[in-house]
Amino acid sequence: MGVKIQRDHVMRKEGLISRLLNGDETTRDILKGTVHRVVTEEEHKCLTLFDKQNKSIDGWKRYEACKIEVYDFAGDKKRII
Image 1: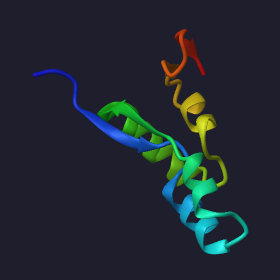
Image 2: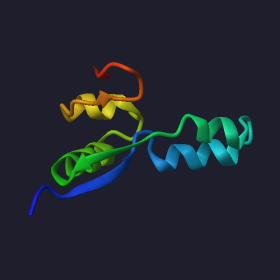
Image 3: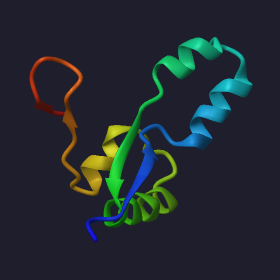
Image 4: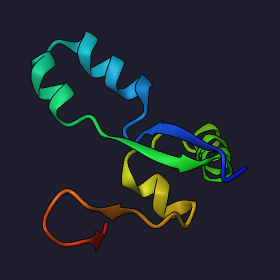
């Protein structure tokens, strides 16, 4: 059957919404920096638990805390973020 996957907002939705409502940045600039990542169900469980316990930590640091390797395939070379 394969591995179950989910989509994760690298920058948590709460933070993005707060930035949108604050009005100091343009919506275009905020959305330009918005990144989604496909994670396994197990990785998503770790990220969710981490978020509940660490409200002030966001972005790629969440992945580091859950020991999730992140590969960037956007350029011409694969790299670990």
